[in-house]
Image (cartoon, rainbow, N blue to C red; front, side):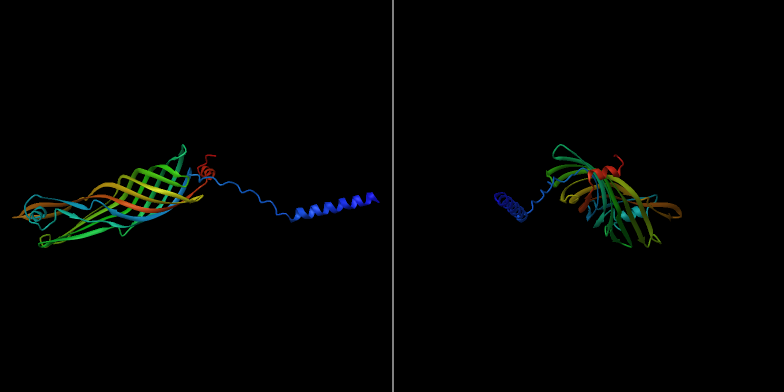
Length: 275
C-alpha cells in the first residue's frame, strides 16, 4: 500500500513540474551583434546639384591688314574688346567608386563620375554703332576621375577631401553683324577640355549598405579659343583681310547631393573576380 502511495505521489509531482515549466515564458534568442558599417569595397550611385561658372570674361582679339575692319571698329568702340557671359544651372548624373580602409579611422578611394548640365549655357549681345556682337558660352557635360582621402569622424560619418582629373565639352560662339560686313559672320568652336578638380565632402551611412553625401567641387578646364572669323574686303581697290577671335576660360563650382549603394566586401570581390 505504501509503495502505491509513493508511486502516485511521484507521478503527481512529475505532472506538476511539467505543467509549471510549460507556463514559463520561452527564452528569447540573443540577437547577433551589429557592427559598424563596412566602408571598403565597391559602390555606385546617383547625384544632382547646382553648377555655376567662376571666370566669365570673353577676350576679343582683332587683326586687319588695312584699316576699316574689325580692329578699326574695336578702336572706335563699335566692337567689344572684352565681354562677360556667366553660366549656371542644374547638374546631375552618376558615379562609381572603390574604397580601401587603413588604420582605424582613415579611408582612401577612387571615384569617377559623369554629369549632364541643364540650363548651364550663357549668352549676351553687345550693341555698337552700326554693329552688334553676340556671344554664347556653354558646357555640355562634365566628368571627373578623382582620388578621395577620408577620416571616419564616427563609424557612420566620413569626412573627405578629393582631387583629380576633370573634363568636359566646352562650346564658345561669337557672331558678328554690321552694315560694313555686308552679312553676318559666325565663329563657333566646340571641343573636349581637360583640366583638374578639387573639393571636399561628407558622407553618412544611414543604412548598412546605403549612404548619402554632400559635396563641393571646383573644376578648371583651361581655356577655349575659337578658330577666328575672317572678313575679306578692299581698301581703294587693294585686297585686305581682317580676323576676330574669342578666348574664354572654363572653370566653375559644383555643389551636389549623392546617394550611394555599397556592395558587401565579398560581393565586391566577386564582381572583379578576385576570389
